[in-house]
Length: 119
Image (cartoon, rainbow, N blue to C red; front, top):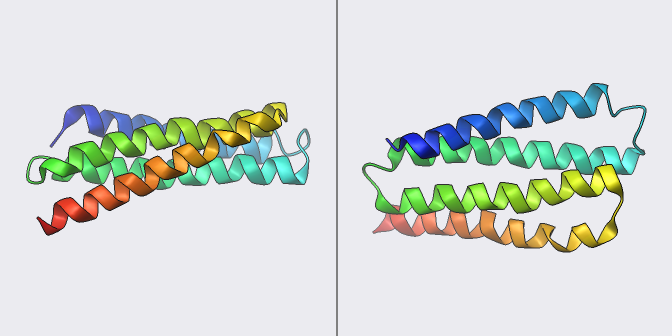
């Protein structure tokens, strides 16, 4: 068990729940349908990867690569979800250029987890 990753996963899970509730209630009347969908995508992917981080924390003791995967997921949340939250709230289109980098970190985390499992 890796306590730092477990904490990172739990914190991200809580933030994802809060963001989802905030989007569904406080932002529903303030954002366009498109911006609200972007915000909801950010919250959904943050939750998926918060759970993946918790999984990585749980198996980190037995699989060395799980720790790196967890940190790749964490970076992916910051860049992918973070840029989508900012884009939805600000409509600054250039922020969308950051999103794919976060997506690549998610993909790298999943790939590294698979490679580590097969070693």
